[in-house]
Image (tube, rainbow, N blue to C red):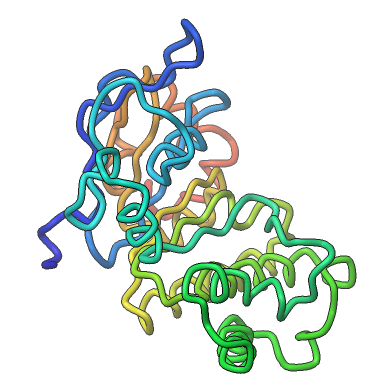
Length: 257
C-alpha cells in the first residue's frame, strides 16, 4: 500500500444516539505512516469516531474502509483477521488489575495469535523493553505502577501482535509535562522504527504540535482536516478559540509568528 493510498477511508459517516446526531455524512482519509490527530470540543464525537472505526459503535450511514477492506461488511471471522492489523491504547490504559504487567501484554498474543505460553512470555518482554520499561517491571501489578508506566504497559499491549495501525485515545491525559513529552518522543520513535500509522484522539496542544502530521477537527458534525499550520489560519469560531485562546497562544506561539 503506497503512501497515496488511504489506510483508513471514511465516506458519508453518520452516527446517532437516539435522535441526537453526532456525525453527519463525515468524510476522512488517513494515510500510511502519518500521525493523525482527532480533535474537538466536549461532545463533538472524538471517541465515538474512534469507536466507529474500531467497530465498537454502530454507524447509521456510510462506509469505513481499513487497509482496503470495507470493515462494516466483513463477516465476523474476516473482521477478526482485520483487527490483528491494529492495536489500541484506551484512555486510562484499561489494564486488567488482576493480571501482572507481563500477563496484560500477553493477552492479545494468546487471544488473537494463540501463541504458546513460552513464546508469548519472551515476546512480551521484548515489547516491554520496546516501550522503555524493563524486566523487573514484568511481574508487577497495575496498582504498583505510576501513571506513566501504566500508559507504557498499555502501549506495549497495543503493540503485542505487531500492528500496522496504532490507535491512541488521549494518550497523555493525566501525565505531568515531563512524562507527556517523553511519551510523545516514544511514539515518534516507534512510528519510525515500526513503520506505524498512528491515529490519536487528543486535546493536548503540546502533543499535537510535537506529533501530528495532520489533524481532523470535529465541528458542526463534520471534520475539518489539515496540517496544524493550515488549521490555525481557519476562521471557524471554534477553531479560532481553540488555537488562539490562552493555552493555544502559549503552546503554538512559534507557529503563529
